[in-house]
Length: 122
Image (cartoon, rainbow, N blue to C red; front, side):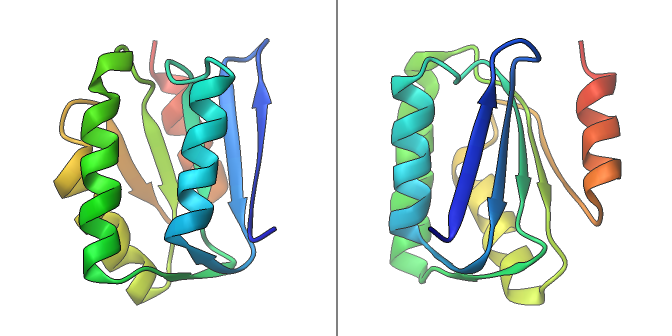
C-alpha cells in the first residue's frame, strides 16, 4: 500500500507515510478511514518525503472539494505535510489552496520540524 497510516488515539495523532507512487485513490482511502475511525479532529502528520505523488489537476480539484465537504466534521485537526519533491510540493500547495483554508496546515522539510509544529499547537 503506497500510503500507510496509523491512528494514535492516546496522542490524538494520525501519522501517514507515502511510499512509492501515491495516487488520488490512495488519499481517498486514507480520508475514508480517518472519517470512519473518528479521527478528523486529530492532528495529522503526513510524510510524503519518500514518495512520488501522481495526481492530475482534475483529481486535485476533486480532493479539494472532498476536503471542503469535510467541514461538517469540524473541528478538523491541523495538518503538517513533509515534502521536498517539486511535483509533490506543487500538489500539496494546490490542495491546501482548494480545501484547507478552514484549518491550520503547513509544509515542512523534515518530520522533526512537522512534529514540533504540531506539538506546539494546543
